[in-house]
Length: 153
Image 1: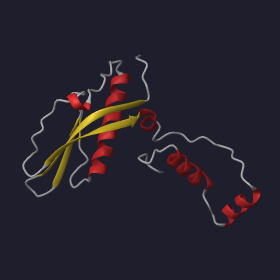
Image 2 (image 1 turned 45 degrees about the horizontal axis):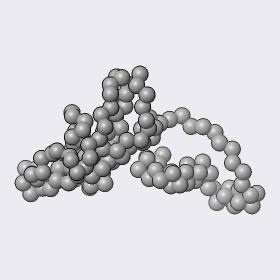
Image 3 (image 1 turned 45 degrees about the vertical axis):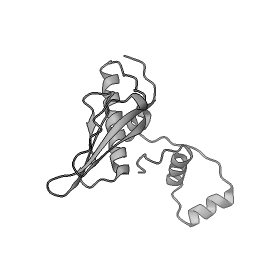
Image 4 (image 1 turned 60 degrees about the vertical axis):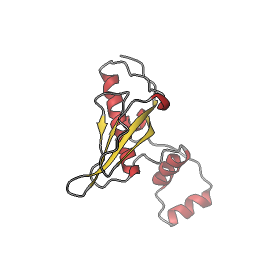
């Protein structure tokens, strides 16, 4: 098996258009990864398209790793080759899409018990207010680690 790194960044081409039913559509392709095309579904915002692209990228890279295939390096965004012609009434844009593979591997992970030490008064006040300490710690870590795109369970 090929040893893999955890963090990848690839340029992605976002095509936005209005279909014959008047629905806003989007598809995302990765010129460096032939066959990888992602789409968030009708009416998606750019952020939703970016999230779908990130998930598609993670799944594609995981598949390459599992199959023992070489992961190609990303092209420079300045040298990227793609169709710059927007669909009628639409737009084309390029954005760098990053992915931390361990986040996608562990999305439905088992939980680990963690002991923390708090001032007694803070623990008592939290219990009095019915604070879910696990949720606060989990969401706090997501924020501190700048992982806002990870689903908060």
